[in-house]
Image 1 (tube, rainbow, N blue to C red):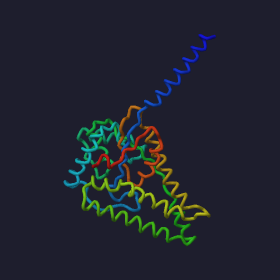
Image 2: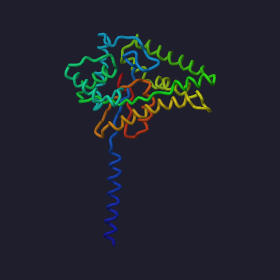
Image 3: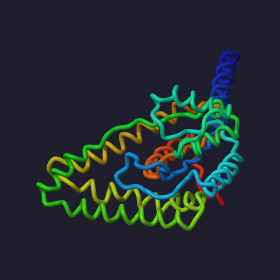
Image 4: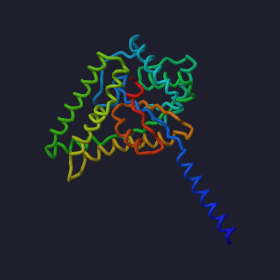
Length: 271
């Protein structure tokens, strides 16, 4: 009996020790979330910058500087704002680019994403976007019915102010400086507040059209998050994600609450 008890105790202790060791030793994947402006216009956003030539020699030099810094992360994956369903076509374009047979168009996906991936010799650039339309027409109709058009007016004023600020930043600064600015915590909060401060109020207590429209935005970002976490392998030590700035506050919140990841602040990389 003593021998059996000793063996049982040993097995239980071994199980607890190995389980604890496995949990403690599991490395987190570092993920750098870079919120960016959209280089090409027109885009799908209602409020967006409509100036600048990112193919100019000046901007191309800045993009080289930016991606040289990002390449130092030695990321094992680069993720971009392109629909997951377009992965195969994106792979074809990237393969051509690596062979110097494809000229990068005016898009932050290629200008930053492809350029960076080539420098760190990745075989693929991961497409992780999933588009969900927002029920804006119902929200506008509800605002008219409930005398809440002032909320949409205030939203527009705030959004245009934000875009004007970013436009000024772009005119006087480099691309790296702009990215550093728009990824500050207060700027990410400023973008997200447009949805929460104005839109969510419309139709509250009745049909909740505003809240439903905001939920569509959250749904899209939850789908993107799901694509991120399912495409990251246990062996991935570092991932760089390049997405429109408006997505970053939600993605950052979701990833910060997943203990498989360590969110890296942009300010610690772009100095």
